Image (cartoon, rainbow, N blue to C red; front, side, top):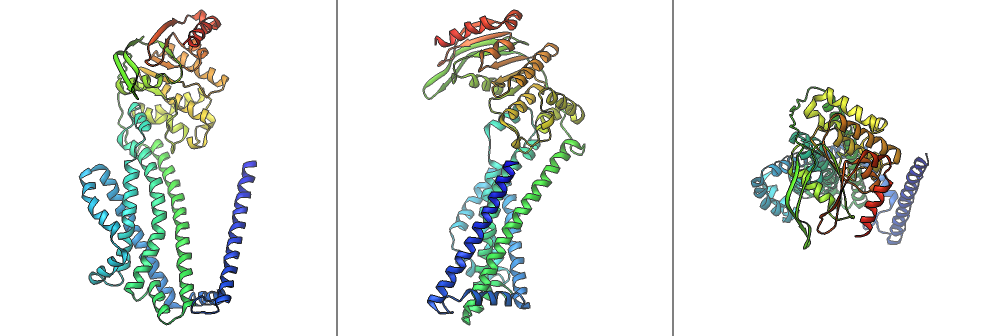
Length: 498
């Protein structure tokens, strides 16, 4: 409620500032018009307002306005369509990108006036403004589309590889959202750019019906007040175009959300039905990792016991995440709950957990599995929420639920309980341990708390830092889990001794 009041106050204050700014500049304009006292240099606001409303009732002016608006729309849709199309194709075919580099560099550097005057010899005066505006805005749309579709988030790419997300699913749920953000900014910038280019080209090419032609005529006959009035029309139309564009993106967001729901619920889209062979073995031999001249791992060898839970404990920053990342990248049948959640931000909580399961179990069974695990992780009330709108701890649980639900032979947990409340943490741990009894997996847990490691593990390996080497192994008995204080104290003493 308090947040709603703050939002309302912010909007109210913004409106006040806007009204004040308009009043201030109006009075400034009035002051200078009186001081100069020359309508040919600076007409008064009253005369401009009178001409503004007078023009709004003239059929020829309205027809000119309609033709200019039509040219703007044509230029916008042509540059957007081909910019997005070729931008996307260039991400798939590098030769095409090379082919476009020289023409784009030329288009960016050539003066707009030169283009208009040259093209005027080739095309009729009605077509020149559209051509000039497309030539100006196409590079912006192309570059943004290429940047958006070629943008790569290494962590999310890793998530897609681990959870067997198909290329089509990556495009729908990862590439499109990234590209949308780039294209939104590009279209907003292009909108104003196209208006300026169209009107400038109309002034030079002088088509029969055009706002630019009206400006040219009024300037020739020294009706400066009407030049101001037409300019205000152009500014208002440009501003209105940008607002309509924002509404378009809002509608597009709704359509995309409905499409996502349709994808998860309808059998219209065929799923690949992957078969996942379970492998439980994790064996590392002579493992080396060097960073900034330091060996994080040097001649490291370790075999993690199959179908058991092994916790790795080491000083912060020593390389636990590096070890898990290597296992995730180099072993098959792996599921991974990373230290940062790395979720699909445009999908709901439920869809993030269900997506990796779709390709293995199909829609019906994946729905049941996701429903069960979200309920066990106390996320049933948040399952329809977009992950952008939930807390950091809830995101961590979604990431954990996704990893636990995925039917791999190896499960990697990188400090996966660190942001969770004690009661929820306890429920999550109990769920994983119960699942481990029924369907055992090789679990490697990078622990940030000794207490968690003792309660959760069958074995704890204590490591040194730089290079990360095993110092001592602790076997955790059922008695240790009941009375963990002694083992915790021993591990803590070893940690403090480093």
